[in-house]
Image (cartoon, rainbow, N blue to C red):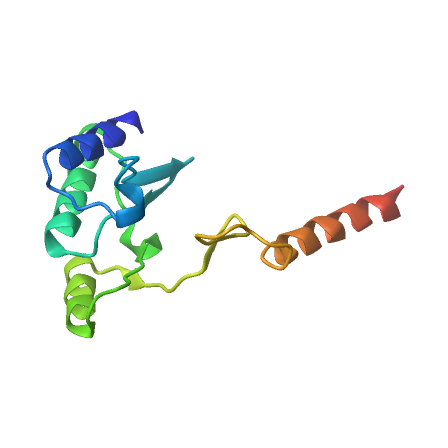
Length: 134
């Protein structure tokens, strides 16, 4: 997905997207994991339109298409009116933090043992099953 990264770098350099405050110094606009994509921009119409345009451009030459049924948006620090406007604009599901990705909570602070308890319990159950099979 290097093509999408190039599109996002271009949007950032042209000032067409507004990065989140903690992402500005590193120019972090998105993360890609396998076939999953997370985009981090301010919740303002111009940034959202630019990102949707980049996704459409990426689809044109890669044939990889946004699946709106599997997509969600996390909106923070905006009014209820702005929230409703952006939800209507994107047709995404409104999601709240924290969310989990591959069983790990996505949070802005250091993970604690409690944060990882669900995935640790899963691994323990799997290991217990292996022990019983021997």
